[in-house]
Image (cartoon, rainbow, N blue to C red; front, side, top):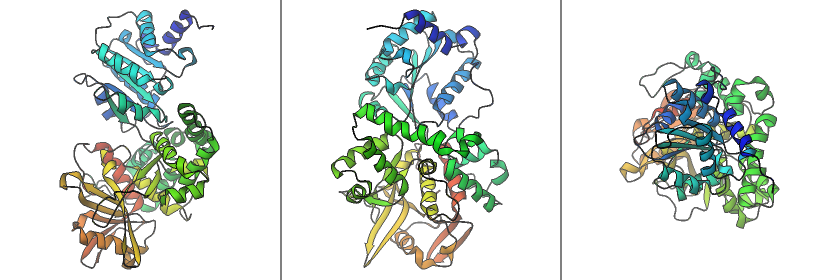
Length: 483
């Protein structure tokens, strides 16, 4: 078998690491905005007191490679020796089939330095290397003074294998699509539309109509920095983002990793979930609507969730108790703009607007540890079935309900309190405080009192902003209050 010469590989390494010669990160534009998550990621990556490798995970096109470049630029500006800083994109054909140990040895040869000194080694798109987690674990143990950082796109093996084989060796950092607050910041309108509120965690707006206009833009293309910053991409989201974010995962990543034979079957399943994002489904109904056999549904759902395309949410009853057998669940898109990439843009009057608004609100928590404590409630009340879209259970209070939110894209509920029967009943039964029960509206901000329960009505776009903003600031060791 013909092999690529070592000299050519070394030339490629030098080209991909220009700071060895110049001492600067010259191939990254200076004007690229930093994600709100850059600060927390940088703090974890540069915490030399913890001997762990850092795994940066997330969907395609959310800015992982850019964030790695910004990290490199930062450490160089802080005086980190350029000769001890290394970046390798594992998906580069030159490295095909090459073990991490071999790539590291070439780094040491091309950029001579003390391998026992403090250094930083970055492997981008690491999921394309077979058994990467075993190799990285070995390197982590062998070089205690080297900070290994790896990134991976929407490949299902990445989070699954990192937990199985990297226990105690890896720290995972999840980079989600843009939050609504980041979207406004990237658009340059955050300071115009948002002002400080009564406390630090509850900012307000004086122009809800303009905020709603931006919110609809966020639903259609706002999850991905490239679409926000490039008008040409926004004009054809299906072509520029749909094919890259979704098609490459469904048609290449998952089939290659798991040997999936019927790619169209997987595509039908995901399209069905995308169309019904935020609706309660069960395996029987999902199999019927998607045309996928029931015995493959569970396996495919795990792949789609691990690939950062969907998030499944479990159900609780009116007391906040989970069910032993979860036959029903909700499945949300990780970001609502995935629906536009698959189908078509929506406007404020679109019938899908309600569920897309709910998807957007839920997706703001996709980085937070709180996500595992969020459920939806659904129970029988006589002949009626009542439901609440979002319920948080507080682990510090024996998983008692802490707050409840019903997501609507309408101002109707303030004048029709009978439509909030589920929210009222849930609040009374679980003795939720006044500031723990909310229902979203389109433009209305007010308080109503129903059967002794006070409910805050807040515009959906404003609540979505608050959640996204606070999620990036909230300490993950502390259970936060109501959004």
